[in-house]
Amino acid sequence: MKDFGNAVVYQIYPKSFQDSNGDGIGDLNGVISRLDYLKKLGVDYLWLTPVFRSPQKDNGYDVSDYYRIEPMFGTMADMDRLLAQCNARGIGVMLDMVFNHTSTDHIWFQKALAGEKEYEDYYIFKEGGPDRMPTNWESKFGGPAWEYVPSLGKWYLHLFDVTQADLNWDNPRVREELKNVIRFWKQKGVRGFRFDVVNLISKPAVFQDDYEGDGRRFYTDGPHVHEYLKELVRDTGISDMITVGEMSSTTPQHCVRYSNPEEKELSMCFQFHHLKVDYKNGDKWELMPPDRMQLKNLFERWQTLMQQQNGWNALFWCNHDQPRIVSRLGDEGTYWKQSAKMLAACTHLMRGTPYIYQGEELGMTNPHYRNITQYRDVESLNYYQILLKKGKSESEALAILDARSRDNGRTPMQWSDCVNAGFTDAAPWIELSGNYKTIHAQAQTDDEDSIFCFYQKLIALRKATEVISKGTIAFMEQENSDVLAFRRNYGTQELLVWNNLTAEEVTIPMQPSWTDYYRLLGNYEPQTETGKNIVLRPYETIVYANADLKIDHGAGIC
Ligand code: GLC
Ligand code: CA
Image 1: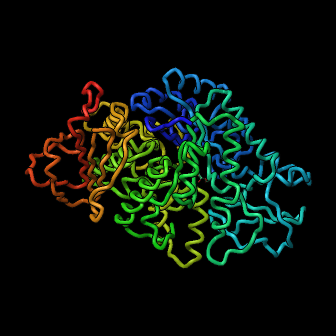
Image 2: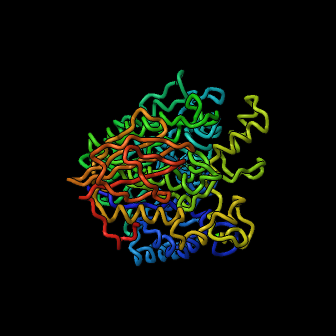
Image 3: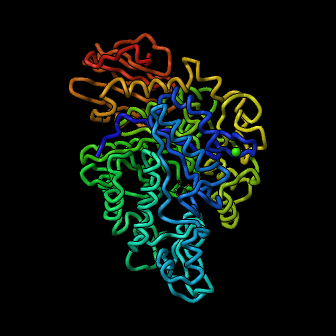
C-alpha cells in the first residue's frame, strides 16, 4: 500500500461551492470553473461529497443510484470533464462512497418493499408487530432507528434518517454490488475514495436492546468490519489508491487496524474525538467551552498510538458536518486571522494527511443564523424539535444550533464581495454568512499575509521537506493546557512547533540546544527574542527548524 504523507486533500461540498447555471445550487461545472484556485492553493486531491442520484433528504448521503449523477449537480459528461480537467492539473478526484445505507428510493429498497425476498435480504429487516420495535436503538439524527413496513409486517433498520436504510453487508450479494460501484468509478479515472461511516457496516449477529446508550456499542467497529474492508479493497484493486474511512465513535486500536498498510484496509481514518471537547457530558446538544487539556491529551494519545503501531491519521478540523473551527476554537474578532492560521498549523504539522474543507483556507466562520427557517439540515431541524420537547426555550435551542448545526459548515463559499459572494446569481439554497463582504477569496489569494497564503505555505512546506510527511512526532509542554506543542524529527532534521491556543500571552522557557535554530514560519511578525524565553502572543504559532533542515526559499514558503 502507498503512503500519502505527502498529500493534501481539499474537500468540496458541491452544493455550496459554486453555482454555474443560476439555480442557487452549486454544481459540477461550478467546481470545474474553480480548479485553478485549487491548483494555486497547491492541493493534490479533491474529495467531492456525494453527487450521485439522490432525493437529497440528507444532501446526497441518501443515494438512490450510485451510477448516475444527480441532475441538480450536472451530467455524467460534466463528471467526465471534471475528471479530465483535474487530471490535466495533476489533481486526483476522490468520491464519497455511502455504503452503510442507501436511500429508500433506491431500486433495491423499492424491490424489497414490493416483496422481492432477494432484495429484502439487501437490508436489515426484522420481524415484529407494529408496536414491537426489534430493539430500542436510536437514530443518529434523533428518534428510533427502526421503521415499520405494514405491507411486510417487518421493521427496517436506519441508523440515520428514516429514508436511509442500512444495507446488509452479511449478504455477499450486497458486497458484490458495492464492489461493482467502486470498479465503475475507478475505471472512469477516479483516484481515491472516502467511505462514509464505514465502521458501522457490520451489524451484530444478535440484535438486543441497549440499556446503556443508543445502540452504537453493538454495531460500531462491528464483528466483521475488518474482514469486509479487506475484501472490498482486495477485490476492487484499490489498495494503492488514497482511501479514507469515516469512523464514527471508534477507538485508536481499531484505527490502527484500518490504516496500518500491512492490514491492506484503508490509507487513513477520520475520527472525531478531538471535535467533541466542547460537548458537555459527551452530548453534542449541550454547550460547553472547549476543554483544551482534553484536546491536547486526545491529540497526543492518537498521534502517539498511531505512530507506535504504524497507523496513519487524517488530520482535520472542518467538514460538512462540523461548525467552522475559527468560530469554535479560534476568534471571530480581533484575532480572526491569527487564530485561523494557528489552527491550520496544528493540523498541517502533525503526523498524518491534512484535509482542508472549502472556505477553511479563507477563515470562513459560522453564519450565526437567528431563525429556525434559515436552517436546512435534517439533523438540525429534528434536534430543534427534540430540544424544544426537552424543555429548552426557542432562544436556547437556537443558541445550540448556532454553535452545533451542520449548516454552519454548509453556507456558500465566499469567492468575492459581489452579490451572494460570487457563489450564485440566484437565491442561494442556503443563506450566506453575512461577513462575505470582508471574508472572501478575492481579498486573499494575492495577499502575502492572508490565511489563504498561510495554507499555501504550509502545503509548500510539506512538499519541501520530509520531516512533516515522514518524521516522527513527540509532544512538548504536556502539562500546559494553553499550548499545543510538538517536535517532528527525521534523521538529523528537527522541527519545533508551538501553537498558543488562547487569547493570552504564554511564555515558554527556551532550551539551550535551540539557540541556533531558526524561525521557519509564524503567524506574526518575528519579535526580538530575550534568549531565555519564547513569548507567544495571542493565538501565535511559531515554527523553528534546526540547521540540518534547510528549506529552499524558492519553494514559496517564506
Ligand atoms: C456521514 C456524513 C454525513 C451523513 C452521514 C450519513 O457522517 O458525513 O453528512 O449525514 O454520514 O450518511
Ligand atoms: Ca446549479
